[in-house]
Image (tube, rainbow, N blue to C red; front, side):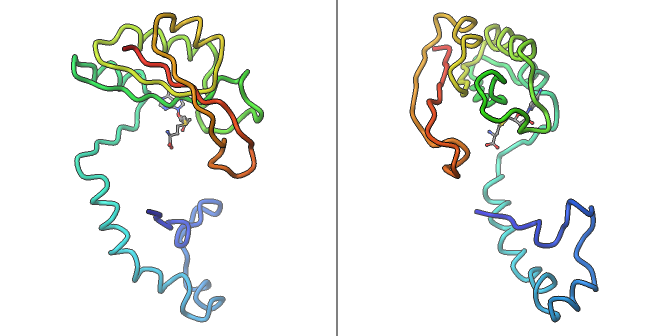
Amino acid sequence: MSFHHSALFNPRKNTFANARHRKKTGGGGKMSEWVNYPRTLAAVCRRLRGVLIEHQDALDVIRVQDTDDALFFVDPPYVMSTRDKFVVYRHEMTDAQHLALLALLKSVRGRVMISGYASELYDDTLTGWTRLTRQHYASAGIGMGRRTEVLWMNG
Ligand SMILES: C[S@@+](CC[C@H](N)C(=O)[O-])C[C@H]1O[C@@H](n2cnc3c(N)ncnc32)[C@H](O)[C@@H]1O
């Protein structure tokens, strides 16, 4: 499913498509894309039924949501030393922040799955955890090559 918000909203200019756009595109283009939005939004609503999206530090969410029957699937930014490319996300994590995340995840009551590239930092900290590996194409297969992704689990 895709939601083409960029068709109407230009994040670079922080503005919506406007009347000038209409002239450029001959009146079709951007403005007629509203026609597709009810169908697209209905698909978004179906997908997000029963989903809660939190806009908070992951560590706070984990502390609040931890119960015996919780499952935390955690997909943090890759450890810097495992990267080809350095800054990718708006919020990157230092090694100290990874260690703080792992310390918290080692203390929770719920089940935990963490994905990432192989790193000593994770392996040395998560001793005794189940560790699975799988080869896959990085960056959704758009040219970054094959890499080994690791899944660490506390059970
Ligand atoms: C590997 S990406 C996860 C991508 C996600 N699984 C997806 O499919 O879109 C890591 C994400 O964690 C975010 N992040 C970094 N530090 C965070 C923090 N303390 N709390 C919550 N999110 C954080 C980054 O901005 C980035 O979007």
